[in-house]
Length: 277
Ligand code: HPA
Image (cartoon, rainbow, N blue to C red):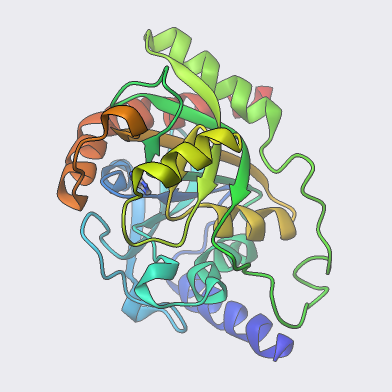
């Protein structure tokens, strides 16, 4: 079975390389409402997920379901324009498969973005947060099952999943563009429902600043695969248990789309300054 995963990764990477020979340095996962950035790539090659072996289709709003290779700010990149989630019924192995493929293509840095609920009371709607740690409350793990040492170690260390130098670059980008880039802890749930008040209160008490339904499985795989990781959240709704309003998926996507220019500014600035990282 572990050979099977390795072979599947190689098969998908071969299809991509046959149409796009340049080696990416940075892999991007563009989350809910944040996919637009991939429209700005130069010399781009686009693959619908269904054209790629072993990829699963994106099924939810705000996620285009394309892998885009190209150049952004002079850096060779590969991006997932939309992702899959555990709540769609996929295993975390399936959900993180494209990260494995982007690594196999050569990417050494992983920038993961998402729309998230803001638990930290200092956050405002549309704020950008650089993740400095996470809590996995999905009760699952993408590394469950046989381990292939060619992909990473059986028991990967997780003492610092997010690269401090990349976080510093993200915060520097915010200062330069005059908007806050906070640092925070992202808590991942399986979803798909948004949380009741008692859960938001509980997550706040156990140290979360943000809550969302993605990202952590991809980060675990990125760390397992030896990548340096930057996680960026856009705060789409405020999860104040004492004054909780209704939230819908459409609103989350709409707020993320509005804040996408900030996220794009951070990513572009990080890419421009990569040598300092
Ligand atoms: N909870 C979980 N996931 C989310 C939220 C939330 O409040 N907002 C955006 N994604």
